[in-house]
Image 1 (cartoon, rainbow, N blue to C red):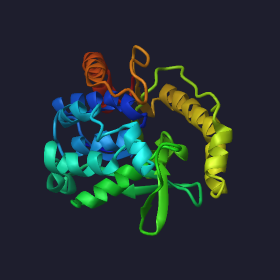
Image 2 (image 1 turned 45 degrees about the vertical axis):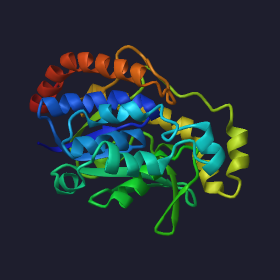
Image 3 (image 1 turned 135 degrees about the horizontal axis):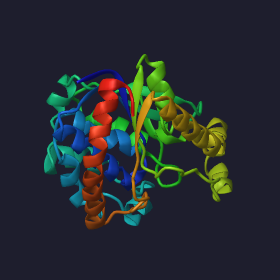
Length: 287
């Protein structure tokens, strides 16, 4: 178990299968972190790692093209493209059991990033529970993408995708007292986000939430500034970055289980070369 070294997990929809493979490679090497902070898919895939359920995410992967998981029919019926109740409640309770008790007692602690749509600010919730309903609500909230998801109401607040306000929470991880961080990204080195072409549609859709609109408007600039910060911290040796080596082999909304499993397996091969470098950095503080 590493101490004072954070594990920071970016989102990215189904690109998160990259993160799932990285976490399984960590698990296989008995490499665990006591502080994790995850956004959207980064949080969703990490709970199995915290619960020490090796390859569970790959088992769940067989459901991703099930219409109950995500479909236009879901969207037409409920306003949500993803069926959060099926993904974060039925699957872990009925089909691919999730060990809530082991999770709640784990030495690894996970913070989930969400965006409050009233304030446009990120909130960081430590998901420390064995309640299936609490898992469903917070993982749904951090994953609720604009336009294809409704806000998730929790304790009187409305939340959406944590990536809108803090896409890669490395600054938060360091501010929480960690000396260094391992950062798992789902885009290749050199990637920078381009302004959204649908910003006018977002402004109209969320016109009653001006702070959220402001947050979305600033997202590209702030995301790219965070990537610049990550590049600097990587050179300084304060963080170790793991990214897809061969570019993005899948898209955010790719729900073909076979393609996702291929990406998962290619990531495991990449991690064979990454892990020795990572262990040296963890032990010696150098790349």
